[in-house]
Image (cartoon, rainbow, N blue to C red; front, side, top):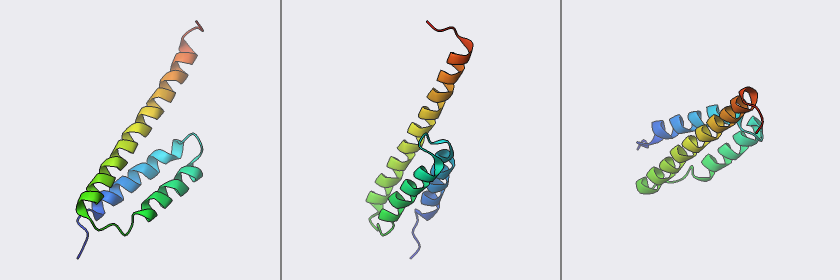
Length: 84
């Protein structure tokens, strides 16, 4: 039986991998942690638990995007506004 969440999990993994390129501690650090997190849950069969893990992953995507936007905002603010 094929896992109905396989495509969604792969898409989440790719999105996180893409976002990890700019991670403050480095892409290699992020990739190792991401791989370990997905490997830890690779044998999960409970659909409700899988949905919960996917929603947690989507939350992490949103948090990373917010982190990057904040970093860019601070860089622009520092560049264009005088120190207070």
